[in-house]
Length: 357
Image 1 (cartoon, rainbow, N blue to C red):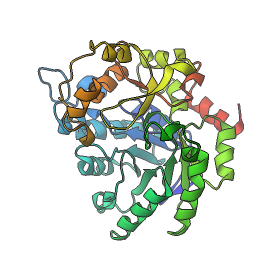
Image 2 (cartoon, rainbow, N blue to C red):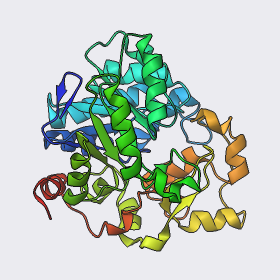
Image 3 (tube, rainbow, N blue to C red):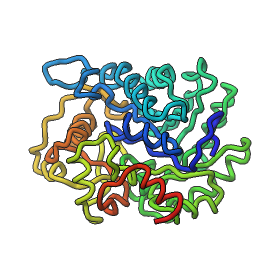
Image 4 (cartoon, helix red, strand yellow):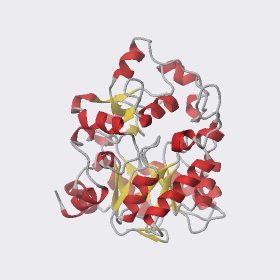
């Protein structure tokens, strides 16, 4: 699979999972083994026990400048490079992030080969990579209409997507659909991929990558047959030794049953999929940790206004999950999270995905 100037040996992109779930160890090892490893840019101030955030009374990264730490992201990408060498390495930057443009430039300067962006329509993304012509840019969309709008806007920058990820409503974390749409047939991945492929033909030879609910080689083969160049998978890599999450995070996923994985409200304004734990109970009982917007992580939250409305700060709760705080953590996973039954090496997972179980 080719994305821009970069050749990926396997047709698999590892989903960029934040906070701290896909950092140097996971992304570096995935790239080393021939797929595309993707570093998450979310919460890099927490990297190596908050070494890259400015300390304050709350012991949290203060402001978006520290939550999205340039030094932290640079260190993560540098350490991933020590693992994968010169093989292609990606970075996922949420368009909803406060300081989005600066984070994209930080990732490029740190040596990311491919920037992937979802959580909104990144209509001005090309302006932030203008000084990095070899960096490929890849938007995540949920409809052909979204792709058409992005291509029209990007044409003004003399750029088009180097690939497009189409994400359906079975993915982990935030969805590109409202709650009702997540359960409607017309918005399922197999039904939104063909129109996106057709729209892409109007703009040239753009590789289409399917994402959301893909688990095994049969799923991969299904979307390749539909005309996709490859797939993106996040949840499958939660069950790896190299995943950067804490052992407690992995234990929550391994112990989760299908009924435990639910769509939940989020300060971002769209439903998010994860494991229902004690956090959700405490939100209902109004005993959850107090919301105080320290990190100012995403624009839709409106500096904590939406967080207070839903009862939790997403930056703080994702940080707790990364650290393994089971009672207060927010544990995102895709719909197949219950199928993670034990830990494997990244190489084992990629072998199963390439050659079959």
